[in-house]
Image (cartoon, rainbow, N blue to C red; front, side):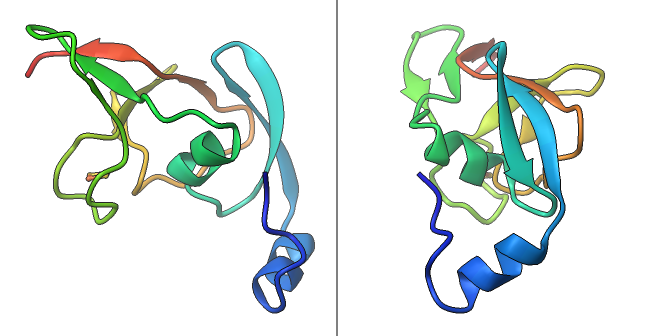
Length: 101
Ligand code: FES
């Protein structure tokens, strides 16, 4: 669910260019400049990765780029920190990836 009607914030979103991305093989729209983690939360996705050794799930934690708990896979790129990466048109994102812990 997007916060589009909140005064100030919503107005900026409505002025931003709408782009198309794919998350877990599902096409969705996003606004240029939004962070990947924002989109994932809007889609109700909380598990971004699983630890290889334990299978433990993780997602957004610090939201300032330090903990790396929010790694997701982007086709054509390395695993990226969702909380620090703005979406780009045509981006293909996979969550629930397995990472070395
Ligand atoms: S949530 Fe900590 S680096 Fe993204």
